Image (tube, rainbow, N blue to C red; front, side, top):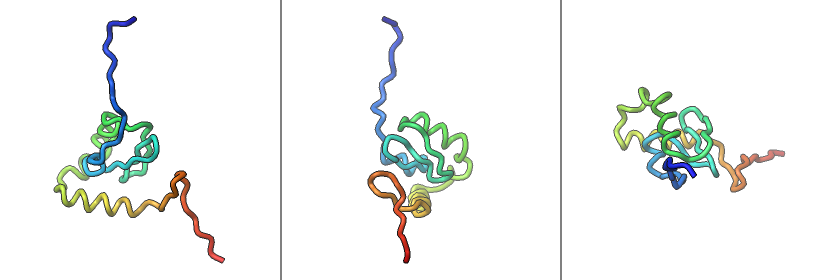
Length: 93
């Protein structure tokens, strides 16, 4: 057995990450609200790295209230989804 310590992460999405990093939880993955990229898993390191690498300069100067408003606006861009993760489509006759 190795002497290396294994990192333990609960792997659960934290609600405050929506405001901090503009991410939402989707089943077992995380989705960036800014660029719609899906990140496998729900680890803070991966989500934070994505935000810092691609979006930090654009949103870092926003206040907490402005960030909340931006999250609401970005969330409205996504199509409503059913519980099974498939987009809901209405059929007009």
